[in-house]
Image (cartoon, rainbow, N blue to C red; front, side, top):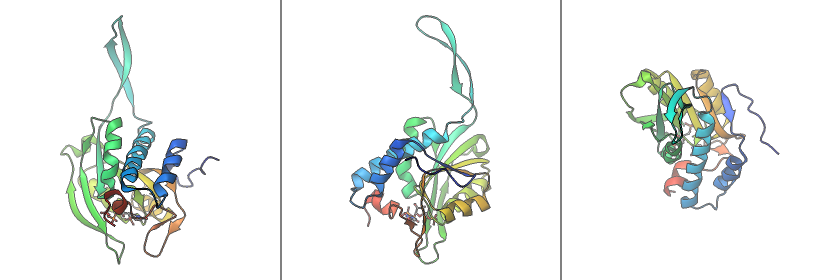
Length: 216
Ligand code: PRP
Ligand code: URA
């Protein structure tokens, strides 16, 4: 039974069976920190495969051992990955295996436990911002406050082309990000049902940062 199609124009949901198999293991409360980390890494690679599916190509002359021919190479802008600290860090290596030439910036945000609003503590990205495509990485899109703030910071720095790769999205987060930044496409493994009173995604996978780094 394939997952339901995305009900949002800004949200693309992964369709690959391996993503959904791995996501179920990730949700499992009994999954160890070691396996959790490996699964986040593998799902990030598969999401990056989807998010890079429309990269433009240009002809590229090449000499095989037998004769010259013309192949293709990816043209267009240079890619920068921007993990939202902490949990986004778990997605960096998976995406880099697919796009090894990408640079990595960092946005530091945490969610205030009472207000659920993001608190900004770090921002550093490569200098030639206008020349770059950005993939913001964060496993969880819950209220959408963190992703919206990260995208706003990138745009203030001059970024124009930004996508978000997340593993689990909640309707509230997709809607908030789309209201603030309708140009930002979201690539997610799953769209979950709702948020609980503490702002956790249901059914979700719990606290992604704590499960990745074993800090619970
Ligand atoms: C988590 C998660 C997102 C944010 C999502 O981070 O990694 O960044 O919450 O929630 P939102 O959509 O409601 O903003 P958290 O604030 O727990 O920080 P951490 O990664 O350092 O644990
Ligand atoms: N952050 C998480 O890590 N998990 C959630 O469910 C919501 C926000």
